[in-house]
Amino acid sequence: MKISVKSRMRALALVAAGMIGPMATATSAEDALGPHAHHQMMPETTRRIAEYIVPQVRLARDDGKTVSLPEELNDGRPVVMNFIYTTCTAICPLTSQTFAQLQRKLGTDRDRVHLVSISIDPEQDTPTRLAAYARKYAAGPEWQHYTGTLPASVATQRAFDVYRGDKMKHAPVTLLRAAPDKPWVRIEGFVTADGLLAEVRNMQAPSESPRADVH
Image 1 (tube, rainbow, N blue to C red):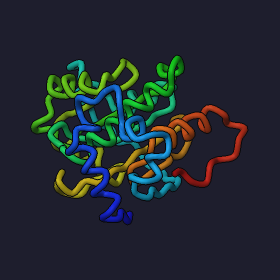
Image 2: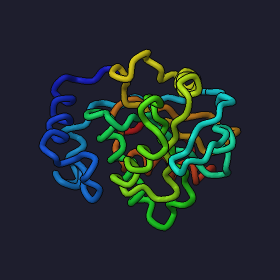
Image 3: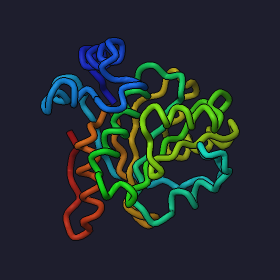
Image 4: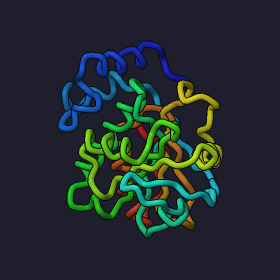
């Protein structure tokens, strides 16, 4: 994935200025700067279809319950998933804010989509810490956060090709799937909430042809 330095600096500047970040649950870069802001500050994204096998691991949900990851992802709803950690100060605030905005844009359909955020720093991110993080972004019951043992976390990251060996090296990746028997859509880069919403709507309309790209 190629991300321009100029685009990255614009995105990080918004975080540093407090325009987007953990406490900005009611606004985002796009909300604050106008409907065309994402064309100016978001790096390019790449979109492709991918096949992944969900690992047979058990993770701890932000409500403290230990669950099977395959069962969580196979609950009958389309899945929108990313990987975060609570002490991240750059990528994660942006991607979490995008999920928060997507949650709002889904409106009354939000409970028909499962938003999933999995920690890549399980040694620090306890369920209690994830629950607090979720509250900062006004996560509803359809958006759940997961942690677990280090081996379970690494196995999950490897299964979805996001493991980079060090949390400081992680990159923005969003994964979407319509149903257990469907392939995944992998989007690398800072995709907008509108881009994710279009993907979800496309998944909910099986008669339509798959979209070729996301901006």
